[in-house]
Image (cartoon, rainbow, N blue to C red):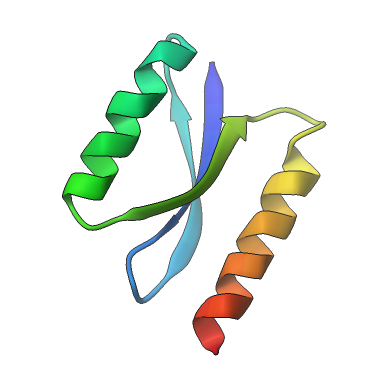
Amino acid sequence: MKYYFILTDGKDAWMQFVYLPTGDHVPGYIRDLRSVGISVHGYDLWNKDTRPIAERTLERVQQRMKR
């Protein structure tokens, strides 16, 4: 299953796509990201319905970082 994650590292914000076998793997993936200093601002399955939500979320996070 293809998931998107909205991520930041204190300097940049980006959207990352990850293929995970099931949703059960998401918490472990998030834990791994946080352990190396990456913040997760949102995630969901990637499809035509969630794409606009993901893009808006990324824009909001990027705007907040510019302040």
